[in-house]
Image 1: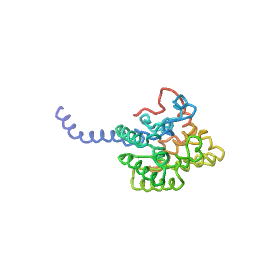
Image 2: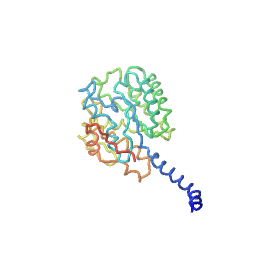
Image 3: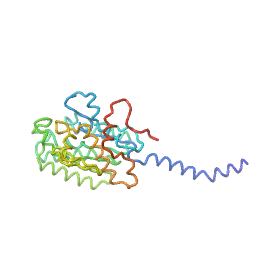
Image 4: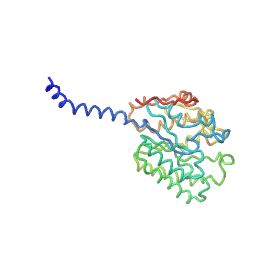
Length: 284
């Protein structure tokens, strides 16, 4: 009897080992499993009414809405973004990318990571801005997992408020940055670009916006931005999170669409809940 059991173990061992590996692989193959977010104030959460942070600031943190958009089991989304990113984009960006990679992410999201490599007072001429933007792209080079980046919006409506004239790039500099981002992303299979520029354009003009079949009608999109015309409101954070996961999900097999909660009202409800608990489902 013992001999029979030993023989069975010898015969079945390879299949058992393969099954174990298959289970392990199934747990780690999801790109949603361990997400890290990098970037500036739109990702970190910011409102002018709480310059030093507070309850409303917490409600604006973009990771909350990415968490809320995901049905697929995942770890709580880690948010490394900083509201003061604009002061030293190179140093802050380098630190964020390093810390993100130490987390061994399955996905990195940088909706506004590149914004201050085009905007800001550290560069004044178009050529200087182009050079700084190239430096921002270089910082992202080591990231090999799926990487979602926002392109560079025209935030001129915020000049005189949150932005100064000196921080605002020219139209030519904006166009050059977005062309370069498109070229750069085209050579990297892991990179997907979310059209943040068109998202912002629709919201600032209060014109229709469509994300994954959901339409915000004309007259409904201005509320996606705060009064500063630069940072998303809670409904805007929910819409932005939906747009970010949608642009990546569009690159994946159709059967994975059920991994996402596509209702922006439900994403808003779940993401804006303040409490100590995470909106993430536990990893299984």
